[in-house]
Length: 472
Image 1 (spheres, rainbow, N blue to C red):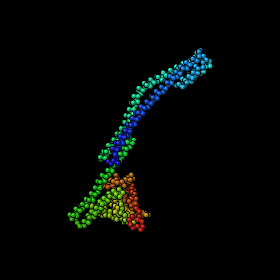
Image 2: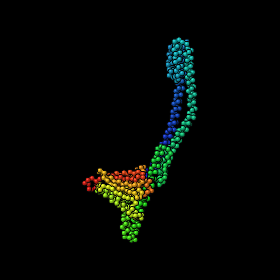
Image 3: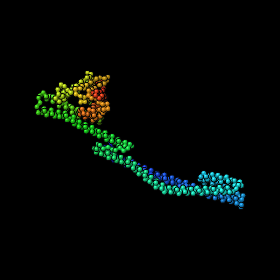
Image 4: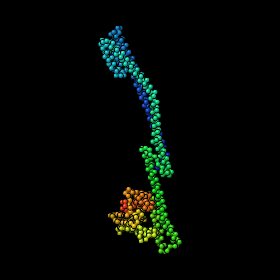
């Protein structure tokens, strides 16, 4: 198999890269899980540390406040301004260390009782508020310590779980990369290698409807098309060999009989005529092959010359009528009762510029098809008429016709329709060659048919412009 069509090594490299990419992504996901757990733990520990530090600071400030208040209340410090100023300063700092709503509410109560004490109120309510505030700080510190211990305990089993999750993510990524990328690609590569070695039945399994599934489906479709074309090619080779074998047998038999000089003189001319017709038949087969190759490579060149298409068609019909008579004689039938009736209709003159030999072969192909695919004793009509600045040539038979769904396959190389394959042999290149020749002349070809009602092939060409005597 060509490397440009399916490079197995390149596909394996690309697959390995994708597999490694999935694995790296899984490792990154595992590290993300670990990092997320670590960040959450660090953030929680930091919050606990801040809260514990703030509660400790608040508890220490409450002791300073109590000390300043007691000094200001003592007899030796009665009326002294310094302890009271210190108490006010300490009270102003306490909201900075507050960490809860309850503590804020206690500070509001404490501030109110401090103001009442300064105005000469009782000291006991103020000291009671200070004690409550300090007790709240101690309770919050115990809660922080309890939460810290719980977090430490949780980390003891959370970290292993995170590690297991990371390993699970890594394993999932490896499994997914293997099952969805690497394994299907290896099987596709193996199927391609087997197909390239001649195993036409080798196909890639389709596991999922994803990118790899689409790639495998595309390969299988390509393999089916190549297998079908290979089968058509083999049938074509066999058909060409068969079609060349029959006229060669006739030529060989006639030459052998004439060499022995056992034939009556009046039969020599008939056998020479059969030799000439069978030779021309082989020439037509070879010419169809040559035209097909030249058309596919864009090298189909025409030898244009002025000619009368109506006269050319009439001559071809006459020659084919004689060929049918020769065929009847070979089969032991009455030479005056050929298997088909050929009838020609047309204008007196339809001048065109064209390749005489190729247009003659077009007519022979169309008439031959009409005869082969219609029952005996039926009529085949060939007509050439002027239509404005163009010429319309039709070949009509009374055969079984062509189904609508098969019309699109008529001009495919090597194609043989299932409904007519058993009726006659053929290379499958006749109509392809006809189409290429007509298109090279700048014309059009159309086929209309209906099952059980016969087939009509219509060709439209341009009339030769007046005063044009030389080929284009």
